[in-house]
Length: 138
Image 1 (spheres, rainbow, N blue to C red):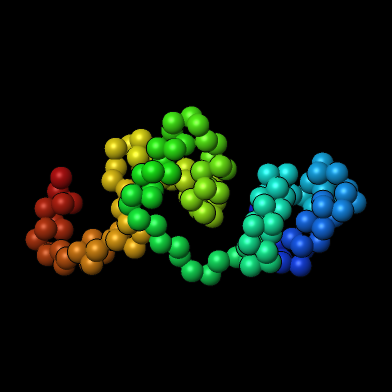
Image 2: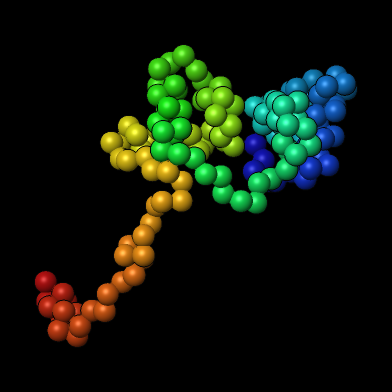
């Protein structure tokens, strides 16, 4: 399906066509080259948050470590689907939740959003000429 971002106007048109039963969901998929899960997601966001829910976020959302762990545990319990967990915790996409699950299952720490990389990780140290020569020899 299409990975092209839809304008707000297009999303509203698709939602109206769906709600007014102008077209079936499979017809909308074909006409707009958009997956039905995406269309249902737009409908949900529109019904829950109005037009604001359809706008693309321009800022990072912050999540606590505890919220991430609880969301992952809810999904892994088998009681909720990916979509249900993202809606319950207002996570913008299932891909975000999938990343958290991958980290959790890989026994990597889930951290509060915004507490990732430190300056020490991004700053490199100068390599001496002697070290470069030694490296090339091995």
